[in-house]
Image 1: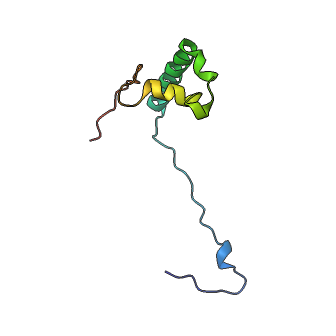
Image 2 (image 1 turned 135 degrees about the vertical axis):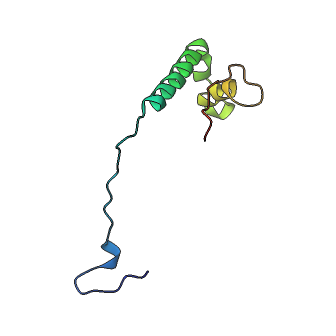
Image 3 (image 1 turned 120 degrees about the vertical axis):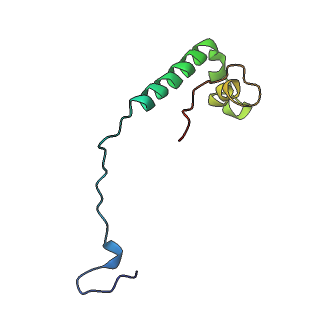
Length: 86
């Protein structure tokens, strides 16, 4: 549906105002999962602080911890329960 030109209106400046409805949304489960992941990586960094001293170009920094936790043979797999989608 094309907008028709009207005197006093600039089509490129028209906008739609929408209100985000947040009623009935409970983010408690998401917050708990996020906090568990943060705690997991915090413990991992405390266990292996040497990863912070390696440059990113040599698979250091965040990549060092990524390789420890994900991939085909992770040393510390990040385990989490995924609820089934019905």
